[in-house]
Structure formats: C-alpha cells, structure tokens
Image (cartoon, rainbow, N blue to C red; front, side, top):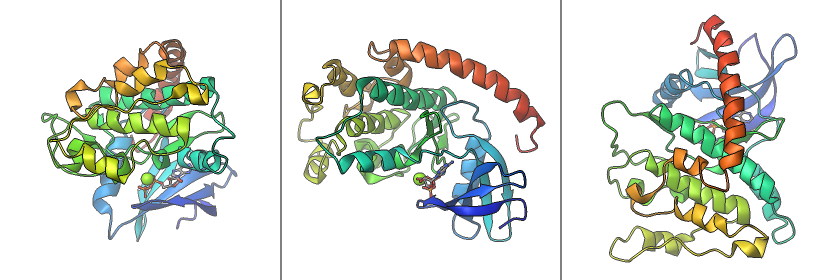
Length: 288
Ligand SMILES: Nc1ncnc2c1ncn2[C@@H]1O[C@H](COP(=O)(O)OP(=O)(O)O)[C@@H](O)[C@H]1O
Ligand SMILES: [Mg+2]
C-alpha cells in the first residue's frame, strides 16, 4: 500500500472501496479507503472532488488523498464506533428488548440531518444516504461518509441519473424521474424509522405500491408510543416520507422542527467553532 501507513485490520467494504484501519509512524490511527484505479476511477475522483470542499463536524474528515499504482487512497478520520448499520444490527438481535432512548435518538438523528443540511447548503446531493454510510466517532457523534455517488449541482438543480441503494432510494430516483436534493430527505425519513424500530419502514410489496403512481400513497401511521417515543415523531416522519418530492421538508426545516430545535442550536454553535478551527489546518494541507 504505502510505506507511510501500516495496516492494522479491515474496517469494511462497500460497492466501491475497501477500508482499513491504519497507523502512521507516530501510531496515530486513520481509516484508509482504497478504491481500485482500474474499476472505480470515476467514483474515486468524484468522491475526492466532493470531500475536499467539505468542512463540518458531521462529515467524516479527509486528511490525505493520493494515488498508488493500483488504487486511489483516502486517509480519513477513523470512526471507532463503526456505522449506524452496525448499531442497528446489534439492536435488531434484541428487538423488543432494547430501544434507543429518546434523547439518544434525537441527538443521533440531529447529527445526521445537520450533516445533510450542510451538504445541501453547498449544493451537494449525497444520493446514497443509508445506515452503512453513517459513521459513529469515539464521542458517539454521527458523521456522513461515502461521497462516491454524491453530486455537486451547479446550474442544473434537477438530476436524472438513477443511482444509490434500492432500499433507501426515493420513488422518483427509482423511476428515473427528475430529482433534486429532496431525494436525500426521503432516505432520511427511512433512516429515522429504522433507528427507532430497527426494521425497514417499507417491505418489498409496499415499495412496489409506492412507485405505482396510480395508487395513492400516504406516509404510514406509526405507533411511536409503543416504543415510548413522543407522538410528535409522526409529524417529523411525515414531513420527510412524502412521495411528491416538493412536499418534503428541507433539511434546514427539519432541523428547526420542535423535537430537534434545541439540540440543533447547540450543534450549530459547536459546528461554527469546529469549522473555524479546522479551516486553519486545511490551509496548511496540500490537498485542499
Ligand atoms: N472513516 C471510517 N471509519 C471507520 N469505518 C469506516 C470509515 N469509512 C468507511 N468505513 C467502513 O467501511 C465501509 C465502506 O466504506 P464506504 O466509504 O461506504 O465505501 P463504499 O463506497 O465502498 O460503500 C463503511 O460502511 C464502514 O463500515
Ligand atoms: Mg458505502
């Protein structure tokens, strides 16, 4: 790989890359994502183009990027607590016994929406939001990763390319209809439900019905109280899980929902401080 980093173990792999836990010569740990130069160049370069513009505590930090003879390498901050997908899987095994406390669910979800709000403010659509692309750091703060299929929308806010992961894909993306940032909001709704109930909001048959526009669709009514959650979660879910894209709330609006508002302000202050501090380090780095 490279003489600068020593591989400790594999952390995970997705459709584009393999990710290793590595150590530098001082023993500092990083996550190193290795994307094949031969098969995935387009996605790797796209990911780098997107990541180098990002500076936010809810986005995984990129420290270095370099090509080797066979791959592109991303040296990133290491999220020691794995992914939201790992967390959900752990809880699924004990379904009915454990649940996330309301305060944890709100804090985690607030982090995720905050990351999406930041991306959208920079005119970037993530396009593959799902639990496997949400990382958890040592302080249990949630961060978005995997920008391989993200899109910087410049002059044309409406996109057509059908890309992402089927389970979390919005109906319009699935049907190759024009779409915009609001496709990420659909995925956010599905993620919120999954964090509360450890299962998918829609099964296969329901997905087939959702993409059939001749059948009416309404966001399902969930018994939030059955898991001891505030009934206002229903309202939060409904502003995201709308089949008509322009009926979905923006990430900014979701942050200001009365369940998240107070947390959001706290997170926003932290983010401002983080961005300022990090900007100075970025100026010294050759990759930005
Ligand atoms: N910074 C990181 N810290 C810890 N684990 C990570 C990190 N980045 C990625 N991973 C792990 O590797 C997996 C694949 O990484 P990802 O960037 O999503 O690649 P792909 O584009 O192939 O899906 C993630 O789902 C996660 O399990
Ligand atoms: Mg991934």
